[in-house]
Length: 203
Image 1 (cartoon, rainbow, N blue to C red):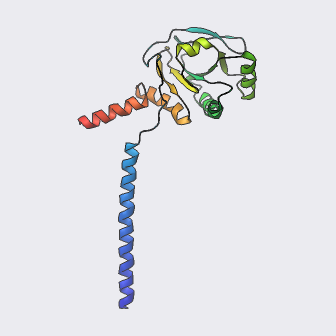
Image 2: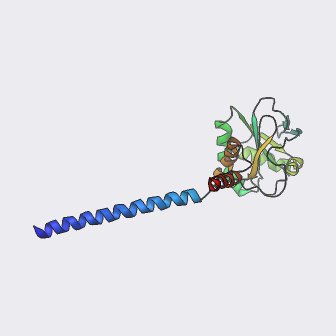
Image 3: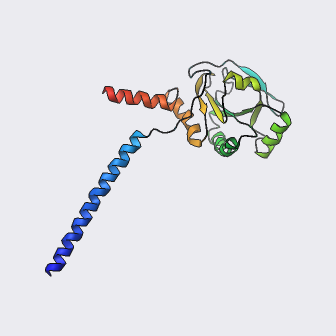
């Protein structure tokens, strides 16, 4: 009986020690979670800054219809311009996420696909990727206006044509960070987090 009681106490001791270890690990995970900032779209190079109004630019879609990017939206929608290329593998990987956003947010958001280069290759690419009915423009001027340094790149404008966010978007998380930056009224997620840290330190 004595041996059994001792073993029971030892087991309970082990359980309590394990509980203490799990609690300590959970606390450390929480601390790490606070320290690791969510990845936002990376803003590279110069170009229009968030808060600047983008003047209207008349373009032509692949189907031949006219299209305007910038200025006040006739539909009262925000506009996401996704810059891509038929030769960009990351662009192709991210296309399902962009198309998903286009479907789910169509009540307030217009998605425009933008590229440059040979029209024949662009039409073949659009058809292969199921972008026939999407707004797809081929324009070197558009890329120059936003100073697009690398692909895939995205620009988010509000209904008045004011730039809300922009940046390199290699993942769905990067893409969604543009909408989060707009919601938080911050140029980028990184700027918002730096501001929050500054306020916390001041407090």
